[in-house]
Image 1 (cartoon, rainbow, N blue to C red):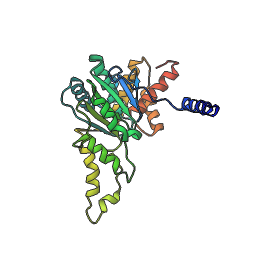
Image 2: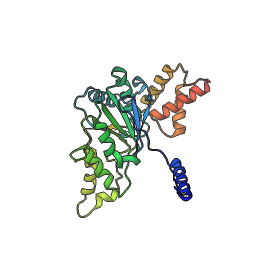
Image 3: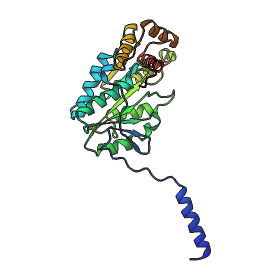
Image 4: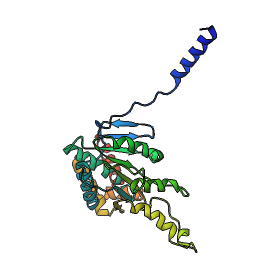
Length: 275
């Protein structure tokens, strides 16, 4: 080997050392949850979620989600789920809490796999990996929404849910949260199309119809808001005042489970207590 060859080899070795190494494959049999970034899955040691009993004001929704996740964990027929509606009303918290509760009964039967909306194009690769594992999986996409003019994303999701050659495998179900049932934006102009005024709207609603369960979450009533605070305050031994809690919601301009939790965090801070 000449001196130039040795120099080139050293340079190539140095460059190779600077390149990012491929991520190690995750073992989908062991962890309670995973995060899929489009390239690889990262195991999560513990699902962060409130106890189911503290998710108040959404009892009908809770009953449906918990029952469906129990079926999936048991290997029975289960639905893909769309949880849609008001912000801060516990859509994603309910999914995490229901999976965590089921794992207490059967730790290895079911795992949660969270996928960012930006990694949707890689779902087929994820499904290929999950389909080869003797375990059930709930693939979770939080706060999903498609930009105006994006037709490929909704079309791919419809195919994964039902009937496509790359549909999700039998041991996998999808759970999606979104602010609106149609997932994609709707505009008044869609209702005014002089050629076929329903086509655009119907096409978008067809995506929601692919989910076996489309569960609506609605704005929080004052009584529900106060009940949520009461549950958290009791669980954490915090004193609270009804008028102060209502004033907190007025300052925030909203009542929701999230606003109630923020108030509980405020109470704990005032009491010099950790949560």
